[in-house]
Image (tube, rainbow, N blue to C red; front, side, top):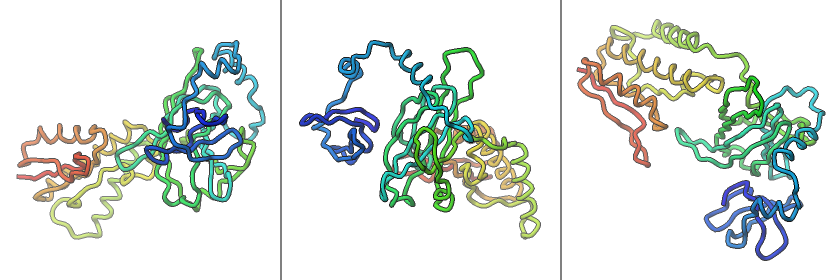
Length: 326
């Protein structure tokens, strides 16, 4: 049983949608009048699409219903650019409902995940028709400071031949100073909500320019520090993208990997030229792409004694590589 599942109570006439997982035995269900109540999983059954079709006497195929929904979409979107939005709608003084809003002309398929370091956990997935919104789940506003990092992955779907946006992936972690200034009347919800656009890429990041800026900053810093021959880097270099640039949300995965690997190369060369005995590169566990690229490079080098995995985490993965020079 997952967030977003439609369920019916075994011992009653109510039905609703699962909005949160309390524990292995209990979930929270939002019933039709908008109230949320905790319910034992054993007291619920899934509502199948076939059952819904039977009781609602649907006589049209799904794609025709979707077409009707598209035509019936409200047109009062003045001042709102086409795009994908996250909206936090206050329910009461303690809770907010989180909505994914699709103001594009495409149907979107989405996956919404909770991120912790290099790991992520899917929370809910689904689809949203053009000019529609999808309620994800409720959040406790009193726990704002403890909200995790969330990631939204989106693919655009079109039934006709036309230019289609590339898939989008966006991570967000909110600061109170910015979040609580964003309340405004939000389209489709017809209510005030704290609303943020996810697909606004702003100015495109020039990776080469960013690398030059980092190298220039490193060079200027070295002018004010006494160092041995060569630019001696730190004994431990963090390659996590958020440590290299604040604009990582505007970069593609390939651009992020390129910047991370170039940072590794620059610090590796500086460590070698400044006669360091060893250096550690923190790349995280993740999917292993950056780690494997680094290890492949090191395997072809003759001027190192060895390199090895280090910083083992509680799941058995290694988040860093230690390099020892000859």
